[in-house]
Every structure is written in structure tokens, then in C-alpha cells.
Image (cartoon, each protein chain N blue to C red):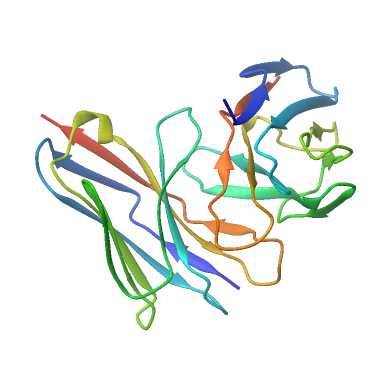
Length: 111
Length: 113
């Protein structure tokens, strides 16, 4: 089966850098997704990692280590609008292109 | 503009009534999904469909039903058998194969009293 762990909450200061970690256990690996979700809204896609290493996309970067079952999302130059829940998800094995989601990390950006 | 629409945004029902949530996409995606989200919890898969006229149960299908008569549409019915139906419901779609992300609709918040 699949299991995903993320911290429940984090707080950071505007302009700072924050790292949101995600660990996973899966019987087969086919990549890892990060989504951003503002309260009451739909999740929006941030990144997809399938190979080890860091992928940078503007202020957001995502890192993957398959051997450690570990990923993180790095947010730089934090802005108030980055206050949101960040969801880590991995595809389930067994077909259907289904995703299993972590419970999400609620990030609060303060002045 | 292409996208996924869900209606209505907010829905209120009395206990014991069935209610159908709408999900429409014009992205020409083959696969569609229904999730439920409760406070402090991740998204949980209710049903999914990879092609028209075919659908599969997810992790929490009890008390729900779906249909997929058209590629664009994947309505979800919350039946009176669902013991705790109040939740935020999200519909998603993706192209049929490959490592593609799922695209989400805006969600419907259902409150049953």
C-alpha cells in the first residue's frame, strides 16, 4: 500500500524561505506530485518529480530522493499569497492513474 | 476557455435525500475522478472513470454512485446511505495515459442537516 507523511502546519515570515517535507512509502514508484490548495478552492498543480534531484520553477522548487522515499517543496521569497495548504501525492499502483494524497501542510505566512 | 466546472458551489440538503453533484470538462480528458475532502484530511478517492461507460470504486465508494455516459460529464450522486455526507467534493480529470497531473474543478461544498 501507500503511505504519505507531511507536517500538519508550518509558519514562516514574508520574504523568507520555507521547506515543506514529504515522506512516502509505496510498493511501486511512478513519480511524486505537489499541489497548492487555498482554503475552499481547488488544488492546483505545482510540480512533478520522477527522477532524483532538484527541479526549480521560479520561486518554487521540488526535490526528490527515491532511495530515501523523501521529497520536499522549497518556497523562496515568501509572499502572503503563499499561505495555503501544500499537498504531496503519489500515483497508486494497480492502474487507473489514481493518486493518493497526504493530509497536506498548512503554511501560514506572517509579516 | 478549457476547464472543469462543478455546480453548484454550495449545496444544502436535508438528511435522507439523494443529491447529485455535477462535473463537466471540456479538456477532452479520458479519465475523471471524484474526491472528498474533510477538514484536516487529505483528498480521498470516491470513484474514478478511465473511459466512457466504465467506472471503478475508489477507497470510500459506499453511499455514492456515478455514471459516465459522456466523455465530458461525470456526475456524482450522494445517496441517503452515505452516513456522513457533509464535505467538500472535488472533481478532477486528466489525459488517459502518461505521467500527467490531474486538473481539479472548483469543488462543491455539500451540507446535509
